[in-house]
Figure 1 (cartoon, helix red, strand yellow):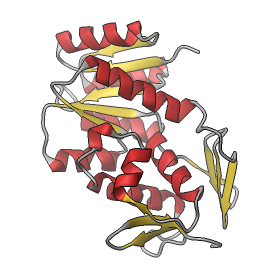
Figure 2: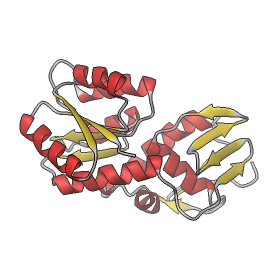
Figure 3: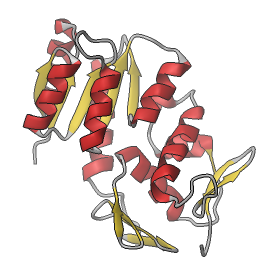
Figure 4: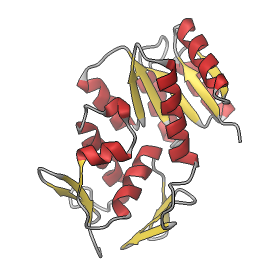
Length: 229
């Protein structure tokens, strides 16, 4: 299966370069030059992954991502020339899976895209296909999550994070370990990213995120999936 990638950036040279490298990697590519066009193309092209520049005319990447997230959990990768922590947090809270700062190596971008596609559409590896804790069920083969039989939609990063925790109930994972499991090189020096992902994940899987039944915070260390809940 050939995956289709949607790329939105207002710099033509970046669009041309990214398109060339992605096509060389065997991927289909659709390019647009602003956020409004990105939302339109997303609805009509059904891409497997979306790459969004943050600063674009007519509609910026943040707003385009918010509109896309209302309709889909498709993998989102942000490109930005800014390095402020607040930008990282904003992107993560919207539901970003990766965050790459300009200037970037096109080959590194392709590596991130491939990793995201594997996490989303490939196998997790030689692991048990289904994990259950309480009413929560995670299926690694179909990439589905249910609670009490009700389907829960997660982003690829949220799914990988949940799968890592639920596969080893009671085992404490540090933030650095979880970052490594997510293969998030773009967040390598940004451990707070895990806290934002956990917050987003709890909002989806917990009945009351303020009193989590599943993901427990181990203060000063990291997180673990509670056993037998």
